[in-house]
Image 1 (tube, one colour):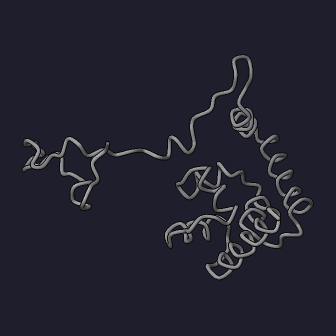
Image 2 (cartoon, rainbow, N blue to C red; image 1 turned 135 degrees about the vertical axis):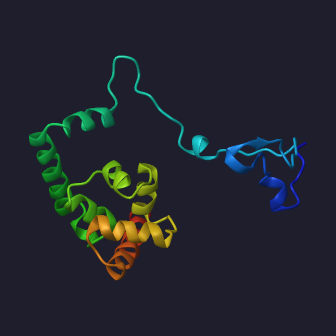
Image 3 (cartoon, one colour; image 1 turned 60 degrees about the vertical axis):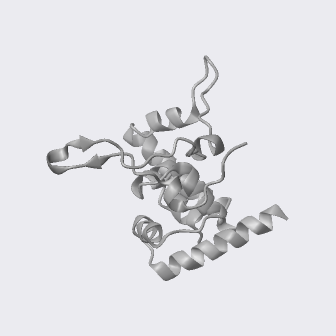
Amino acid sequence: MMQNIQSQNESWQLTKNFGEAGATTSSTRSNPSARIYNIEKHLYPEMNAPKGYKDISDIIAKSEQNPARKAALEKARANLAKQHYGDEGQTVRTARLQLGLSQSVLADMINTSQPHIARIEKGTENLTLETMRKLCKALHVNMNQLDEMLHKQKHAWESKKK
């Protein structure tokens, strides 16, 4: 049975002291029974394409290196926003697609991960102010427009679940 941690100080242990000129000293506190789990790797396990197959993200990345193919992909995303998601109104997803951006490219622009962008587009993610600012800059919208887009996105996702 695992020991319960009673305080936050026990879960975040100081492991090294850095003295002057970067010299390290021995640890000041330790608790060998404390464990830290990285949940992210369990939620989003790395999946590799089967042998002999190519991963779609690799194909897209290679295609986007060619300027003509990149332009064609951007145009296709804009058409997708209009034809397939046009009934949603202006949402994060439609704004991204209208700009011709993939989730991965948008994630790189705002320094986050593609799964995080997917959760934002589902309307299930609570965003920090800093992430909202980065999204506003990347999508060329103001904070009020982004707030409205997020509400529409959540409503669109919930109506599709029904």
